[in-house]
Image (cartoon, rainbow, N blue to C red; front, side, top):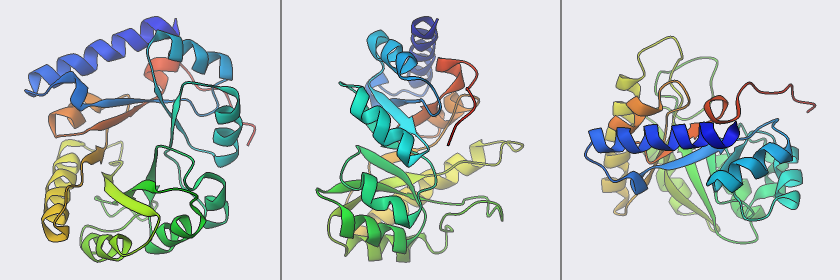
Length: 222
C-alpha cells in the first residue's frame, strides 16, 4: 500500500513540475514519517523514497539508528535544549525560528549544519517564526555564525486560507534575501499533502508529504 501511494505521489509531483515548466528533479519529496513505525519507513525506502521528515527529536534519533540508507530532515519545532542531539547529524533543519536557535545549533554542531529560516508569512499568533520584515536582519546575523549554513526558507500557511499568496510571498522574500546576502538560497520548503501542487507551481523545492504516502498517522507516544 505504501509503495503504491509513494508512486502516486511521485507521479503527481512530476506532473505538477511539468505544468510549471520545471524538471521533476527540481523538487524533493520529504516523506513525513513522524509516529510511523520503522517498518513503514523501510517500505517507503524500498519503493524509492530517500528523504524522511521527523517532528520529534527523540523519534528521529531512534529511527536514524535503525534505518540505513535514508536521509533525515527535522521539520518540527526544535527546542534549544535539544539542539545538541541533532546538530550536524541531519540533512536539513527546516524550522529554525530564531537567531538564538541558529546560534545554539552552530555551537553544538559536529559538522556544518544546513538550516532553513521559518517565516510566519501570515503573521499567525499561534505560530513561531520570523516575520517577513525581520527576516533579512536575522538572515544576516545567521550568515555570521559558524557551523550553520542558511540554505533557504520554509513556511506553513493557515490551512483555512488559499495557500498561493503565502507561497508566492515566500518565493519573493527568498529572492530579496539572496540578493541582499549576495549568495543563493536554493531551498523553498513549502507544501504538504493538501497543497503541494500549488506550492510547486509557486517554486517549492521541497514538499513535506505524510498522510498521502503513509496513510493515517498513529498516535505518538512522545
